[in-house]
Length: 215
Figure 1 (cartoon, one colour):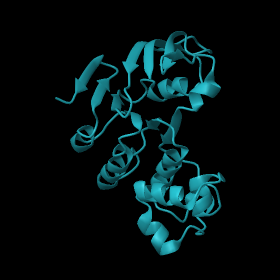
Figure 2 (figure 1 turned 90 degrees about the vertical axis):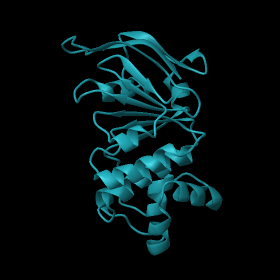
Figure 3 (figure 1 turned 30 degrees about the vertical axis):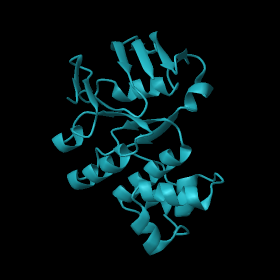
Figure 4 (figure 1 turned 90 degrees about the horizontal axis):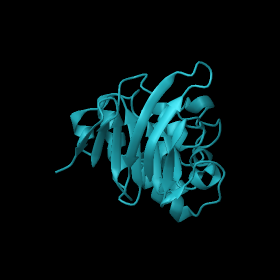
């Protein structure tokens, strides 16, 4: 994925949110975008998802400009956010979202998302309750990750995915999120521990226009 000179201005008061954002993500690369709260990080992800339109700039996937062709763009992305929606249904449904998947596929994403213990203890037919009331915050995030992995899409976008979790759980979730070599990850965050930062290949400080890379 390549983003070239992306700018966004609000439609109501024509306020400039950000200007001239450019970045490139290689297959399987883990990229962290950092900026203070209110900078426009979530807006940037919504632009990538096609939920908003930029003032200027291009978004390229496999060298093709997908601006205005969001159906094609969606085939490349899965999305993990800080407040996943949970259906008042079974654990199985909340992972698959009703899609027909093989037992082997389901078993694999359950393992990769770190849900083995929950499934072993309570089973896939466990009712998760309204808004996931029968699950912990960490379990809900792992269900969201399982959904993303099950989609099989090559780029995972994460919006402050662990900001509401305690440090140990946040570290565990990042270890799960970043270990798949086949999936590129683009995460936005305003704060993150040094241990978690070290898991990324590239850290871009959007507000300072600086880039850190692993040596």
